[in-house]
Length: 179
Ligand code: SF4
Ligand code: SF4
Image 1 (spheres, rainbow, N blue to C red):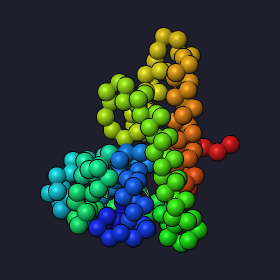
Image 2: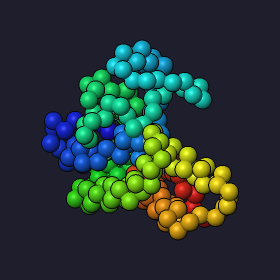
Image 3: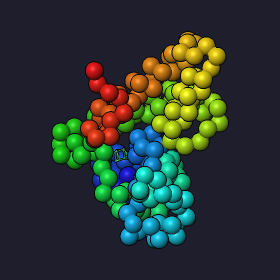
């Protein structure tokens, strides 16, 4: 999220209604550049080194009620980030009211899968919780045989990720492989 709700521009209104790039729906972590690790650490982020880069996990601990609580000091990656939908809306390729509708649709799809992803008390991004659930299913005695609720959830997760891939994620960040 790159905007402050203090300025009532169409972009700010869109982001203030969304938050999917901060709340663990679109991403599992945010990388922090080496030169800002000390400053970001002082803000209270729990930083970890993984795959050669410093990161903090999503949902972002500084995200509160669709607002970035460290907006003035947020990491460079957050300042620079714009999802594909925001870019298209700012370029006039998608009308802002349509972008708002797509955000609402994405949030409705997230709400569909929320009970299942939160059912085993796991924390972390949606992607991480989903991976843990999937592992649990695979280790069940009747491996490979999902019950009806699990099958429905699998379809809902796929639909959600397709939607996020199509409207929000850059092509390098997509989660669902197209046949
Ligand atoms: S996902 Fe896009 S529209 Fe939503 S808050 Fe982030 S930049 Fe804004
Ligand atoms: S620091 Fe702010 S902009 Fe960056 S992920 Fe956290 S809430 Fe979002």
